[in-house]
Image (cartoon, rainbow, N blue to C red):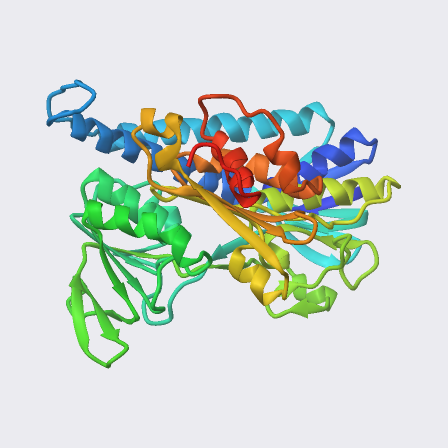
Length: 465
């Protein structure tokens, strides 16, 4: 069965795909979107949103536990307990509201949504296998590839049984007594810390000599201190060999060749994600590739005319907000607008305890780039709002050129600093200098005052430190 041709056909209903479809429809482009699973993709269903819900629930449970003892706030409660099934239902409710909202937006704007598994025939034709054995053939003028990514498994420890990915970790039927997390990247530490707060014993194994390798030691120091307070065991410079013969422990080898076992009721493998390139006919297009990622230019064009690719399929950084921005841009280019994807910076957030946010260049990055720079940070220990939140660990750091004070990077670590990412992105995108931020009145008392104070300190006249 063949349906009428669309101007734009989008494969994948994740953040990049559904945003592209909505924006295209707003611009009057006849648009069809194909999604095999739930709208919203990894982010809304098994990634960003459910993980932050679980992290929040775990944090609230741990906080309640503090109030069962001596509390400086004068709050006293009985020993708390958690109904894990209800927590998962609450998390699923948030996911359902958001995915239902996406479906409503697509319908409101006139996007034709086809549920089924897409398989590319050529750059103008896609075959969709639907439930019940029905097959549709869709034709288009422009084909947008937004298939996302998938979790990477370890050859020595494939997913199944006690070995799980983040997907299974976000919907636990029960809490393991002992959880081993493989890889100390942001996914592993976010979920590892959440599980520890829920009551599991947690051990983290990392092949490198430092945790959260995407961030420098100054940023990760408060996170490592928090892990020690929580009682999370961190095994650095260790490689995972697989499960032991009885399947109740992870075999680990240190850099010195010493082998040991870590007891585990469940093992979370969080070694990363890779572009979803298999099983839907991508290879038929013979596109230029960057390893496993589809190669694109600064307009998200692939090597084939009128075939576009966005989001995780195109490689790092695999961030939902990057995919959204790319999807919106592609829709506008197809409509005739002049656009290029050239962001000054894309902020990245790690939702550990405390949180980390980074946008633009760190001092190390600036040094590698050969910039003559100045850098300054303002500690939350000197911020009144942080004190009232009992969260004085961490700081805001700014990096700027020495000659003209142009800001080239921001970083922060602390409770709730993910919300500062917008201010960081704004200043970088608008080409702000230290004087611009220092001269902007920031509301008091807020964590955002640390942004102004960091700029002031870089200029040599911080007021509160």
